[in-house]
Length: 219
Image (cartoon, rainbow, N blue to C red):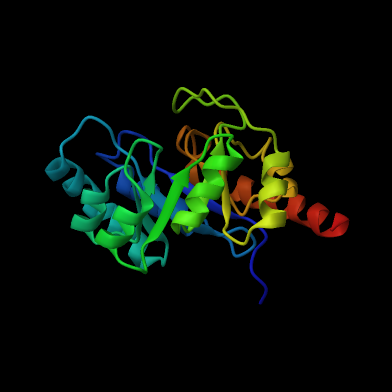
């Protein structure tokens, strides 16, 4: 079976306590081979490493049971402590070489590159496993200063083999243009967790599959 054209990359809300583990399981169980959920990023703020690890443990098990990569946002130390599948680094969160040395050659290391071709090429040369561009749309999850055009995804995917992730305000209604432009992954958070997470995943699946058909027809 051929690889899906575009896959989902879920990002946690900042509050992952209470019933969130059940919500994560429900979202992952709604995954579809046409546009599968490939990864889940654990992203919390304002808690120490011990508290973060306690919150992360049940979520990591849920991901492992469903063969979904568990990625830690920002913290190489927490990723190593958890034995996570990888880490996502912002521009101020450390360097790829350090993450690789501490997490091992099999870790998935992603780098935020905003709207910069230069930062993306630097990340690729440093050994990143994926680069993330955004925010493509206004985001309710975090303040954004950079607004790339979808053509950036086309440029990257045409020239480089390293996958690219599109992030920022992405919904089932607006994601088609990013899929058609060449995004390998769509990083989504609020669009999934603000309502019925399973139905949101199914809506993304339909939108991605439709856009992927159009992308295949024009390639």
